Length: 226
Image (tube, rainbow, N blue to C red):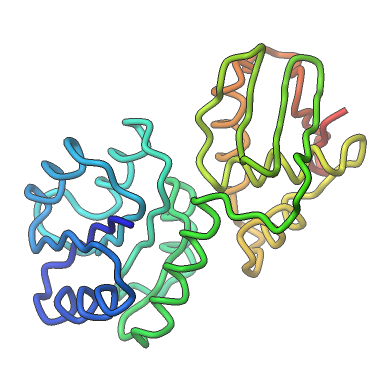
């Protein structure tokens, strides 16, 4: 597994590298954003750990770059900021997890392993569990989504949202329920993270018209797949 670590605090980057290498991960460590971006643009990665408060292009801008380039591997934001608004901002932009400094390195390793399990599509279910909805095929075993025989490149979070709604087909699911079951975190009343991710999924499914074919919005209640 190849993991990129970006932090301009050398001691922190070196510490994270040490713990990751102890778990036999391949670590690509950078202290400045330009070097990290050059590597991101030309190499395959399985996960990135990005410091938000870094000179040059900050961590959130690099996160946007990663997602805009179509890379779906997990991204963990590492920062001294602890405000809920900052956390929501990172998740809204496509981050998969968020950990604040100072942190326990063992907790970070646990978060990394959890995200990699999601990304590498480990599944204890032995059967090929597929859901078919009018041209849309969702396979929970392979974590693949096909639309009219063409694969849809969803991030792990986007896939889990779509799968959750598909498994609850016909039931209206609130943003709170979606967030707490997919992100495994406390939902905030001002949280628009779910709405942003739903919009991205619709874009990838070419479902942006006035009448959505797959994910329906039930105003004031939530979302459902019919």
